[in-house]
Length: 102
Image (cartoon, rainbow, N blue to C red; front, top):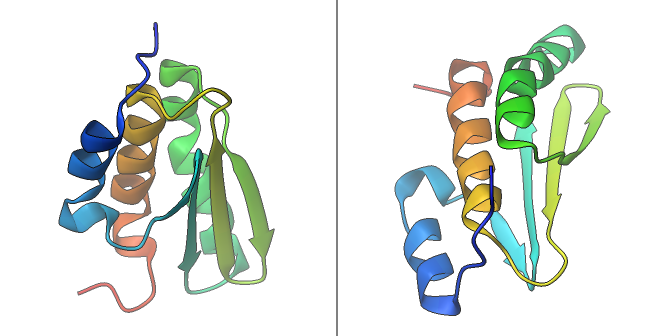
């Protein structure tokens, strides 16, 4: 999959949806921490994104600490459509695993 670099307005538009509300952007880095029920659920969240990581050929940093899972998506040279798509897919995969999910 060939990634297309996004300009500032495209990034803002892609991050404006409700599923991106908890993602934080600093330059070319996207971050999201998720609180889940327990450690095994945290591992399940990571397992649930493996397919998307392979399909998109993007590899986020993943940190698990107890019931917290943190994701960092970095992109040298600017965020791409693939970076934002991965963030959307992580959010969807986390779904009902997130503590407080209604």
